[in-house]
Length: 224
Ligand code: SAM
Image (cartoon, rainbow, N blue to C red):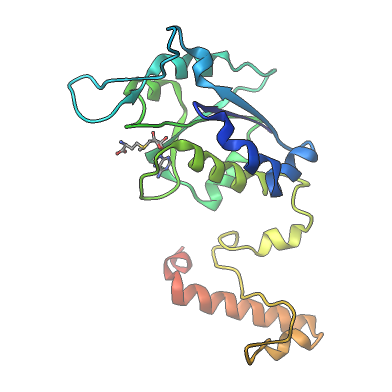
């Protein structure tokens, strides 16, 4: 999968792309990331990507043309690029949405800044995506969230397919509680069943724990 990150701060992505799952996905050849500096698509000598809002009001608005020109310049082989604008106005990212996006061959993530982007950009994207009901100062952090959620779903990236299948939201529940060594921490022992070596009993315990945890903290998930 090829992901194009359209941003005025390409340097924002340097470390996150060089560690953890995104790095592993890139090393495995499952993920290719291109950083597209929107300033490269400006025409004035100040390389301005923002301007004052028509009608007045606070702050600056990202200009439409550098974004549209950058989107139109993306041409990678046969597949059409799916264009996504990160925006508080979009549908909220979910596991299901990440899984669908992970099937795309080519994806462009547009990162807004300031007061947002000129409304006319919306005619040039396929969808708007939010990562939650709060406002970030820029779309870069949101794009990273989307990229990370997708990268771990790409074939061959996570070592253990089973672990991905049991994770929160995959089967409409939260994941069961996890423990590691030592056996006792500040007087709290690991549940004995996990030391029993009985795989059927462990699986049954985990299923029950996942269901109970979900019922307690995210009953909305079980309604589905
Ligand atoms: N004035 C806008 C509003 O009230 O909806 C907020 C603009 S925000 C400060 C700047 C940029 O950050 C947005 O254009 C978008 O790209 C990104 N952003 C902010 N919050 C976001 C969220 N919850 N999900 C996705 N992107 C977000």
